[in-house]
Image (cartoon, rainbow, N blue to C red; front, side, top):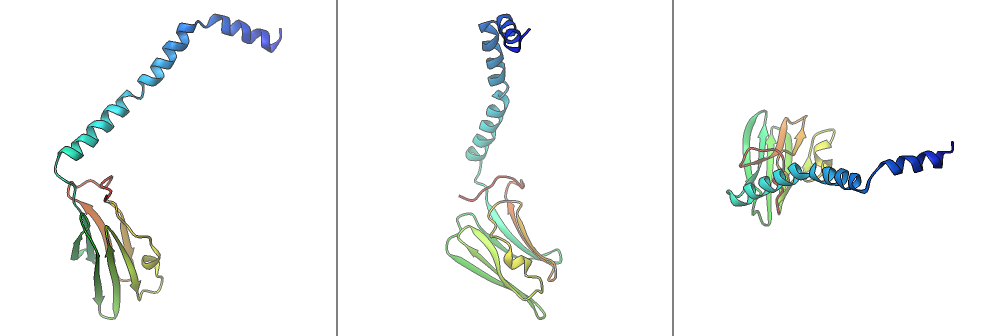
Amino acid sequence: MKLSDSLKKYFKMIKPLDFLIVLSLILLSFAPLIIFSYQEQSRQTVGRQIILTAVISHAGKVVRRIQLTDHKGITKYRFTNGEAFNDVVATGKKIKIVEANCPDQICVNHASIDRAGESIVCLPHKLIVEIRSSNGKNTGGLVN
């Protein structure tokens, strides 16, 4: 018996309605995803506006807060601790460490951040720049 003969026999067993049932079940499996994403989106837009704030902290203590939601222009902040310094710049709705005198420069080479839950860390200076949202969630909250 050839391979094509066995395929013909298999396709004879499947009725056109079977394809329709399988296709409808596959499409129906995406219904919860669509419903829940729609509910989450409507909850965020109907409720209060999510406010994103950049929190700059040193050794666990908050030293500065910069609100990023509706932020326009440039806000500069220089953190100093003895001879150690970090220059933090909020441009528009993004924030970045642009200059530091730490030896590894990882914090300076880090990309700008603009979403809740993102952070830039300077380990030698024990400085953290993180974005927090007003609703307490670390996902979503993208600044438009």
